[in-house]
Amino acid sequence: MKVRLVDIAHARSGDKGDTANVGVIALEPRWYQVLEEFVTRDRVAEHFRGMIEGAVDRYELPNLNALNFLLHGALDGGGTLSLKTDAQGKVYSTALLRMVIDVPDAEARRLDLPAAE
Amino acid sequence: MKKVVRVAAGQGFWGDDLDAPRRQVEGGPVDYLMLDYLAEVTMSILQKQKERDPSLGYARDFVGAIESVLPAVVERGVKIIANAGGVNPPACAAAVKAVAEKNGAKGALRIGVVSGDDLLGRIDQLIAAGHPLANMETGEPLSLVRDRVLSANAYIGSEPIVEALGKGANVVITGRSTDTALTMAPLRHEFAWGAESWDQLAAGIVAGHIIECGAQCSGGNCLYDWRSIPDLANVGYPLVEAKPDGSFIVTKHPNTGGRVSVQTVSEQLVYEMGDPHSYITPDVIADFTTISVARDGDDRVLVTGIKGKPPTDKLKVSVAYRAGFKAVGTLVYAWPDALEKAQLADRILRQRLDRLGLRFERILSEFVGANATHGRLAGDQRKAPEVQLRFGVRGPDRAAVERFTREIAPLVLNGPPSVTGFAGGRPKVEEIVAYWPALIDKSVVKTKVDIIQ
Image (cartoon, rainbow over all chains, first blue to last red; front, side):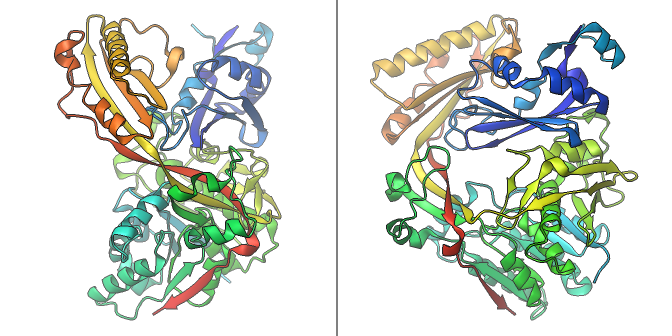
């Protein structure tokens, strides 16, 4: 079943130099395992391919039902050097939530995940 | 010892809500008011002001803030901690003293002034002594941009603030303190946490991280269920009610808007986060994977369980240096085919800059309304009703950037049709002051506390 990340998580993003960070938090604690399993480092790197210059790191925070992603080379140099509208990476959060993941039907039903239309 | 200490946040950056400090001391009981004024580039702006006038170089909004909270300080003993000193803490203290006297509170303030973070005058000596101040991101030595450095400050921790409070200060003014130390230091002072009480110190740092961006943890900029967040026009700024064991409640004053919930606090916890296992500060390394957050009634979140470990022997240094010039010009194109028209204007502009022989380090064009926030992820926007072409250039040559700014307006009459939105005139050329993060041995940075009555 296709599931939109925006239907199962919320997020906030910010900057550190030329790196943007995106914290993604499950809307329901039981949905954290879906984030952990399907929103992998590789999947996020693929999602942002061509938009960021560097690698992606992922950290898990099960205590907050959250994942933290670092997107390196995401801010056109970052800080005052950047010419981007989003020089401080404030809206990478919802850009990540555009992701659609594919969850096996049985697991999706068991966790009551909302299906993408 | 107090059983609970309340630290309220009244300012998340220089430019935040001017009335928030007063609302924080009048809306309910608080022991400390914490005001964070310094972002990464703020120090360089302050350094430029100090060069023009040696009596400046601090966050001047703080003087107005002090004036607005003076009755609470004088009559109810609320203490103020702020990194408003910028690159000139003594001048900031003098201005605060003067405004207190003007308001009939002569002698009522005992101002603790923290200095020692400013390394600008010591750079050459430090480099000669074997501290390369290499860029943490690129590894390049500072000598590469030495002649363009505007300011250099070490991020200092809680110790000098604790010292000032111990000497009876009711207003503490620092330069480049870490944002989180402004909250942790008063807790450490009140609860007599030792320099190796790692878990409690880490808890104080996490409390600071949660409230240092002001209302961003109490309903501001919150994505979770954003439509339902009440009365943001009257948003309540956050405060922590901390206990000696390091546990604390995040809340806000009654009869204010916004919301404090597990979700608003969690969003702020992940804001600007790196490796959550190692949130490094001068005092302690906090482990964000040990934080427990739980609802404790309406607009109350209980935070517990935080673990800390010993810090490194380095301090982070924030260096600001001149890094060339930039300008951004915009034009708005209307339906039909708004995006296609803006794209044609972009190609024409690039050809003209090329023909003029102008060279830049970087040219970036964005199409606001189509791709400026989410790039290609936004999908096909050819049907967008309007699109803004946003065209930026950056380079070392001011004259080239200046010449670029004259190429935008002509497009209105000699480029693609249905264009508007140029009334603001020519784009402004801005000098870029860039940020150079570095590390330095803790042992070379000596802080000092002066008390001014």
